[in-house]
Length: 465
Image (cartoon, rainbow, N blue to C red; front, side, top):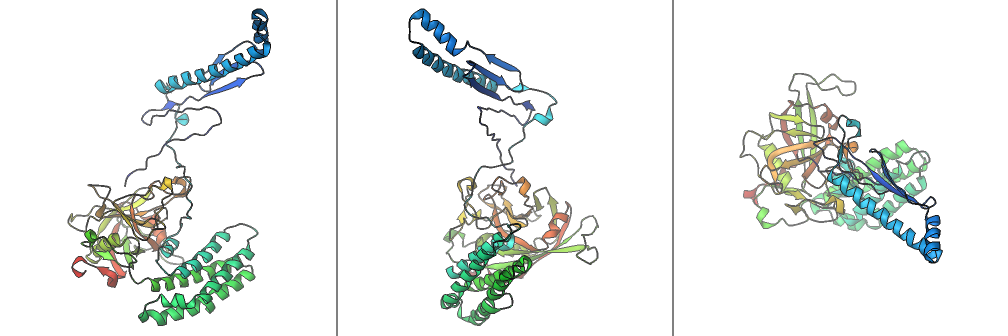
């Protein structure tokens, strides 16, 4: 996993230049220049390296003196002197900048003054990036536009619930009423998007969304009661029902794969993999609430074939073949990573596969420029995101076997809250059950088994296409 490249950016109202070299500790000197027109002198200050002062006579007195002797108007001479002072100020600034760049001032053993690599990237994405795997997976479903409108209206309530103290219940109520109106007015369109063999189940889910125990009418009542806990529970239930309806509307891929990629396995929808993890040193995992310490723990990962069909297809096939059974794990502060595998022929080296937000098909063999506002449908900046490592041969391809669980930490993210590696890896799913186990995994722990518990009917192998 490549380390992000960061650069130091310093903002100041004064002219400021900083030079830092990571291999050595240099004391970076900041030169600030100020023109004091009242006293008529220029002061160039080296904050940590002493003071350099260039003084001139009082502008007013000097101008009068020269004007008296030369016979020039005083105002004209004052203007000329002030203009010259500004030029002198700029000249001194340029000289000191060149000196600082050419020969930075080293100070040994002043580690606390050394400048570390920047921890921020300056960008301001317009799109709200999902912060949970469930939200990211729900947004990735290519469903009916009316269902997406209902989903968006309800998801806005989750942001409103975060407002401390006085919550905008009136706005929340308006959002639910809007969702209800769309659901009732567009009933025929919503149900028409569901395949014939799934119509009955779709009708049941639709009725549940409107009048069910966890439906929109019940959510509306919770909002009128102004109980934030009940609103949160009711909202989660309504969004789960919305996601179930959307999955019925999306039985397969909404785009055609390029012909050259039909040689790879592919997953044409969702799948679920269950990992059983055991401690390599014989210790135990923390007990669940009211339970006993566990020798093994389970993690479930939902695979999203809608956004990454080739990557999920290759991964699902490896799971079915038992390729990950007995695989050792290693840990860094950012990820839980599998080893490279003993069988180098296992898996396909699939091209890097990333679907940009707002697009209808993935990009292949290319990364996204987050600084320019490009964001993926499946972001890496979610705790428990699952992605393939890069190929050893080229970053344009994913490794055929090696994957990692990403341990997103906002403290190590950019100013937009995004990982420095956002848009650089093929993210293909999220941990949904057992996320708490990830922080307990240590280097040397082992994947005892990996099973595809759902989605095998959506896996297409090359000889079946």
